[in-house]
Length: 169
Image (cartoon, rainbow, N blue to C red; front, side, top):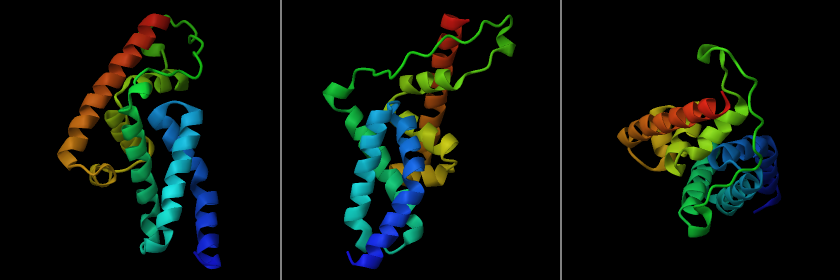
């Protein structure tokens, strides 16, 4: 890479590293793994930087690399066990189910219960704000698959959140 390309990459990295790290965390539920996954995505981008002509597609490339890394890693035998960074404190007791609010910790704990591919769909759709078509492109699947994985992922997340409320409520 020439100096201008290095500067362009450095600017992109500086501008996007926190967002990519946050997405990685939502996908895997562990800040240390998120750092590693974000780094892998940026290294892959750096290798392909010269070949990418549409610089408007950089986010999509990084996102796709990130999601594939998370899903591939989840298939490895040593990653099948569940990891939890920290056990959240129970939320304050409420008198009525309708008055209970899902805390950030409960949501993240619930996301950890969702299988990796479904979690990827939920993160891309609801945290990254992608529509069905863009999510399908990012994951390399059909729009129908995105819709079914979204429905299954939301059902799993709801069940996990219901269990969280029942345990702490």
